[in-house]
Image 1 (tube, rainbow, N blue to C red):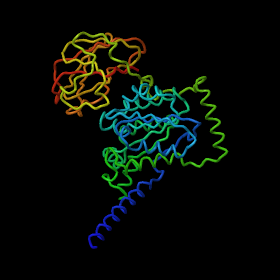
Image 2: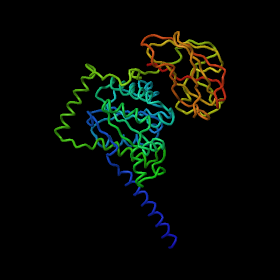
Image 3: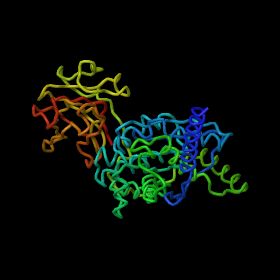
Image 4: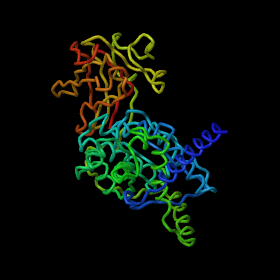
Length: 405
């Protein structure tokens, strides 16, 4: 009987802790939510897309938001696109938007998060983070100028520490500038988590770290749900629905003009171009690598894809493109090397493909060769050199896509 009572007490205690966690996760104010011009009405059907890194790819806030939308708008037939891709930044996002999101259909509501990866993975400058995020926003609004957009700043320890020093991290500064310029709603999870931790309402472990636990994802989802809790009268709902349906029918006829870009070199026309159209010799191969024989982990997202690969120095490829920027989306593994390249008749430059996360992982990253070219046709020449980068174990290049703006 004593053992039974002890077990009962333990079960009750666990249930109590779970209840407290659930309640705390729901206690979020709107102090770190900026609404701007947020469309909360849908027609008979709606396409909702999510783009970001591993926080969006994981089974976290995204399915919670999908469930919330279905409950709030039971008469709407939703199509959900999950375009999270681990380790990727806003720059890569700008180039894969067409393939991973817009190819699925016109987007009505778009959630995007890259603050963490622009910070800790890419270490982007403010300029680069603006070019990536602004490129995404402008490209999306050319697909549907009436799409609602929500920009989410998730948390890591550096982003929170910057707030404690009365400043914002570079990635959040850049993304905020884009959001405020275009009147986009923002959900600042990093600031909310930092404040709750400092107020002893939450711990970093409870939140779950960079990849939030269910508790942390619920907190983020609840913050997002507050965007839909603005009071709307029945009369306003009817007029907005009519207006929305009218706007939707007119999209193909006339697009309202976008304002002048914050950065004229933003990647608003970013796209992937398959590297198999390049000209190259036998030293380069367009094939699925034999990953079992190659050191380092390759994620399932890429393990079945063809790549343009080479491990011999001095073997040139030529890629012709039309645009004002060119780069490459690569898998940079433990053996990633250094490439030299020349665009038209410009001086020869070089780029290190190896990344600080490449030691045991074929890390997906975008390297830009030039993003301030004159609009028009250009020719890229590229080859590997025989210098092994520090910490790397080889001189290999593996190209998933060329990136063109």
